[in-house]
Length: 81
Image (cartoon, rainbow, N blue to C red; front, top):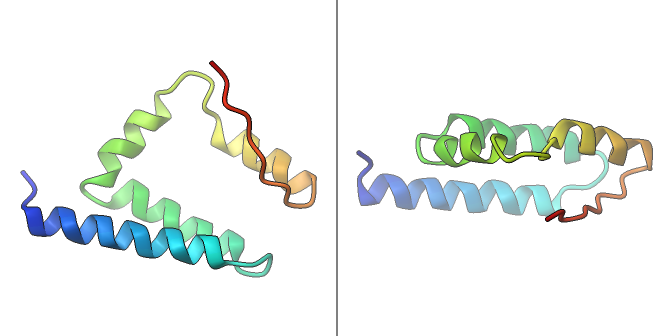
């Protein structure tokens, strides 16, 4: 079981990596995205959330991301019911 200190550190790190991603540019986006995703997959708290998101039907990040790259980086998305 995680302690409150571990949870706070995980949330802080998540925020830091998310901020880095939001502030990235076309030269740093892919590397920053990979760091963010690695954190989400490996952090003790966020890995559980990551696994839950992977099981959402129709949620295919890799294909969505590849399509966005083809459009020159337009990262729009559509929420489907």
